[in-house]
Every structure is written in structure tokens, then in C-alpha cells.
Length: 375
Ligand SMILES: *Cc1c(COP(=O)(O)O)cnc(C)c1O
Image 1 (cartoon, protein in one colour):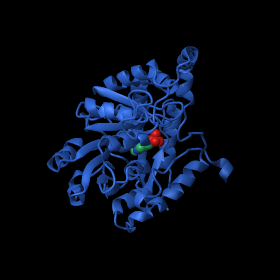
Image 2 (image 1 turned 90 degrees about the vertical axis):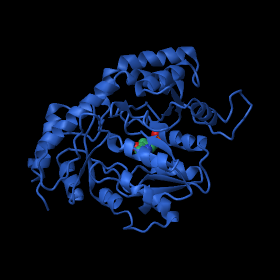
Image 3 (image 1 turned 135 degrees about the vertical axis):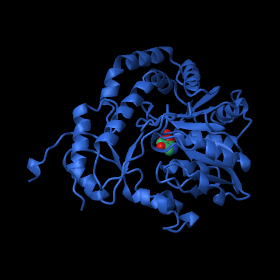
């Protein structure tokens, strides 16, 4: 029986095609840096910071070691810490919450809009207390959150507005890029992100000169002058090698994001199965960069197995809501109290999405899903 199944290898993600295309550029960049023998805080970093800031439409960018560090350094620079609260969406990758926890502050979860999976601006005010210092809006799955509405709430309550743009390099909201929409933003260059390093990396973007300077100091052991320490900082820097590779990759980002957009539109047009809820399409003012193409279904495990039997890779983003994770049992948030996050975590499945997916692969995913029978 199994032998008769139509099968095609469609991995959940593959860097092969993308990296083959830029092999020569990357090799040249590596040779340049290797010959220069400068590996930390050199010219590649400075140039990449300028280029990335320009790409996002902000004045400053400061490289750091990871996306988690980007968020942590932002919160440290804002002097958020013990006794404070920071609002984050209930359905995000755990790093958003951990960045808050690392400062000693408490993450406070607000439910998303089920249509877009981004923070619901109408639910924020209920969770604001005298301890609330900031809001982290996550551009989850590559779609920018409702920044105008969130900004209104933030301003009304004098809260800092931070973007977690780890999944949204290049995304656009009302003509402006992710990373330029809050007071300050954090990005990740984890290899699987829309713009990924060949290892770990992160960056902070802002128009606030003082903030940029403070973050730079915090990420470099709290010092401007070597061995003179103004702040109890940490070591979180973006290596020359990664900055150099990212400069090469940034030039291709728009092309890679368009490919994602094409795949997403094919999925949206082609997938017709009553068992499956598709993500909403984008409107004209905004550009979703489809970091993840998230569908929902009550028969998630069956669909996952069915697709896997036919060669199609999928991933769940994310299978356990943060408040239900063992790591966060200290918050004592009861199961059932954040029903949307729990609904998403128990029904979400992400389809293959990467630059270099062939038309045959896209068509095969669509046809295979359309033939899936409800259990
Ligand atoms: C990936 C990610 C991060 C953390 O980035 P790292 O580089 O892995 O530390 C933070 N927030 C979100 C939403 C992410 O997807």
C-alpha cells in the first residue's frame, strides 16, 4: 500500500539552492576577511550596520550575537528589570519571553488576533498595571503586527514600544519596513530566518542615537574605551565573518522574500480543503514576508503523518504555548487561561517555504493537501 503512494521530497526548509547561488560571493568574502585577520568589531560590521539600517529605513543599527540578545540588550538599555512588567504576545517563540525574564522583569501575555496571529491591540489595556514598562510586538510568521493601534495604547500609557522583528526582515507596514516602526527593534540572523547568517547573529535598529550608543556599550562589556567599564554589560557582538556573509546575503533578501511571496500566493490560491484554515492574504499597504506559512487544522497529527508519508516536511510553530512550558511554571498561569495561544499551539502546522522550491514541489504540496481526507 505505502509503496503505491505518490511521493516527492519536499523538505520543510532547504538552504541548498540559495547557498549554491551565492557560493562564489561567500567564498570571496571569507578570503577577504581571513586575509585581513580582523575578526571582531571591524569594517564588515560597521558596513553591515549601515547597510541594514538603510535597508530598514532607520538611522542606527547595532550588531549583536543573537536575536535573543538583541531583545535583552534593548530591555537593559531601557532599564527594565526586577519589579517591572513587559507585555508580549501569548503565542510567540520563547525567546521573546526569555529576554524579559533575563532582565528580572516579568513577561505578561496578551492574546493575538486569531486572523493574523499578531498581538491584539484591543486586549492590551486589560493587562497594563502600574508596573508595566513596555510592549514587545512580535511580527510573527513574517507579518507586521498592528503597529498604529499598538502605538496608540503605548503612548496613552507612556510605554516603550519594542518590535521583535526576528521573523520579519524586509516586511512592510503602511510603506515602512519592520524595524522602523517602534522605538527600537530586535532582529535575529539565525540561519533559518529570512535573512540568516551562517551561524548565530542579531541586530538592533532604532532612530534613537542615545539608545543605539547604550546598546553598543552594553553588548561590549559595558565599555567604550577598552578596560574602562561604564556599565555592567555583557559580551554580545556580531563577528566580522557573519557580518561579511550577511552583507552578501542582504543584497539578495528582496529576491528571496519575493520567492516566498510567490509560494504563499500559490498555496493561498491552490489549497482547498475544508479541514484546513489558511492564513489571511496580505493587503496592498503591507508586505508579509512569510517567514512561516502557518495553517491550522483539528487533525494536525494526522496531516503531519500523511504529508511525511508522501515526502513533505512540516514543523509546528510552536507545539506548546509559553505559559504551558515547564520553564515558565513559576508564572502559575493556568492551562485554559490563554485559549487562543493554546488553540494555535494545538492546531498550527507550517508548510514548506524556502527560496528554490520548484513549481513541481509547490504543486505537489497543494495537490497532496487537497487530497487529504478529514478524519
Ligand atoms: C528566532 C526568534 C528569536 C530569537 O532569535 P535567536 O537568534 O534564535 O536568538 C526571537 N524572537 C522570535 C519571534 C524568533 O522567531
